[in-house]
Image (cartoon, rainbow, N blue to C red; front, side, top):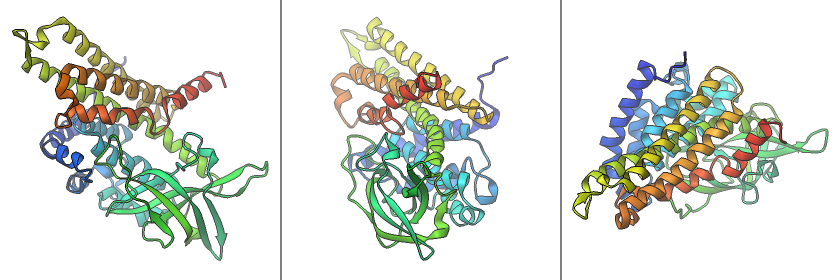
Length: 384
């Protein structure tokens, strides 16, 4: 028997986060978004709720939950605002998860408690100015000298990298060559206060305006050799596995945004009158909203299925790519349709659907473009 019902624990978490998003985020996020301000107070509240520690063991200050709990939380946050959702997603999946998955016991003890509490944010330094989807084109280098790594290079579009509470960035860097002549790429933890690490000016973005995004540069940036994360030469493979998990999380964010579009459109269709009736009385609007709900339902099932395979310890790369592709498409389509239903008001930033429309596009790009997802799916089908 297949049962799609959430457990009592997951259902309770979903309800708690839904209420938090509606009561604490919705009233203030519009103003923060317009000013491109990072939501420090909201992040602090999420930290006190334990959301940053959801999937991590209690011994490190976590909540001892699972990855589905993270996804459910992200969906509910994104129903109201994606900037807040992506701040949590990056903090958990990209900031803390690499240390939890690949770190030494000393590294876990040093970093995870502060990351789990939300008092500190971690960043994930993979993308470079000349290499996004082609992460293997990494140019940043790290040379080991006198028990130190000396890093030189730059990173682009790094989430949570320049806040007042950012504590570290885990960066991929070329540390040598393999026996077959390819680049040996390793992952290295760089504390934010390390001399030689510079944070560029915040990007001016189309969407996710209350999310923190910067470029980073390393100029003879020195950290102890013990800051190597995982095995030398395995950094690229480690981060690819992190991206597989992250794609499920981005799918959850996408589903949340798509559901938020339905929520707002249903409410507006009942209130807005045209030609003597609420516009929701007209079949054209009914059918558009019905299509939106169908997209959300299908996309949610896709990320649930991917998360279930991951939690069972089964291969899930294809399912994660399908979930990310289907969900980001649903978010973009629903944002466009919601804006159309709202008409001129949908083009105004004071309405949530205006934010949703601006935020949706990056979901088809971040953590692997839609084209990359199709490539991964085809490869898993034996069409490499």
